[in-house]
Amino acid sequence: MDDQVTYPLTTSLTGTPGVKTIRSMSGFGLAMVFIIFKDDVDYYWARSRVLERINVAQQRLPAGVMPVPGPDAGAADDPGSGAFANHFPHFPGIQRWIKSR
Image (spheres, rainbow, N blue to C red):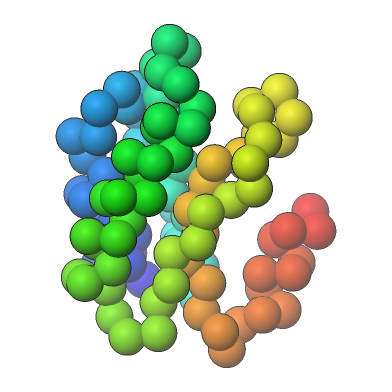
């Protein structure tokens, strides 16, 4: 998971303007990348930059891997907001379990 999904996504997001930190974690069938922007960066502008980078990174990911954005929310509303998670279609139970926690 790390070599095929998390690392390519993280390296593709490196250098995105306004990024303060990029954090990632992965487990069996799930990779999550958290992009933390500087406080003065506009949320929607930052989200657009991330989506552009994700579209480019898609070519480097294995077949069947689809990065999807987290819900639109501010950091005060949801500590996991703005996260991109790679969901594998054959592990929907894990996705639901993580979302419900």
